[in-house]
Length: 44
Length: 130
Image (tube, rainbow over all chains, first blue to last red):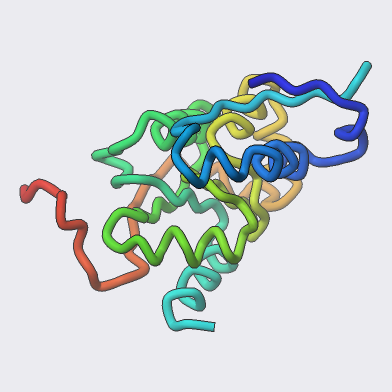
């Protein structure tokens, strides 16, 4: 997934990806999502 | 803090570059772990690998310490730099070298040595012998 959000501005890539993992915690935990590739960008 | 958790934290704190992966540096068992190692190799960084497969508790304790849910996890100078996606992205843009320089000075430019160390006495039950 690629996520572009103003929420990312000022955050490290690690913290940006943590937000994505948090948002998808449920499908990740129950196996709906088995593998996830993340790209994040602050809004430009 | 459990003994295992302490051992993991010590490894993160004491090793300049450490990658927690599925498998070993010689026999990587996961494409994402391989991507992270290849990113480190692309800049010539020496690193220590830790195999999380011998005991599911390694993953659980590591994720509890790092607040990062997935494997691989790459640490530089005690700081979580990211999983495969971030490390690959940083390597592609030159920022991985910048991060290594920032945290370690020149100490990581020592020939691209690779080792796998254990944080538990347990053996991976699926590891092929030999």
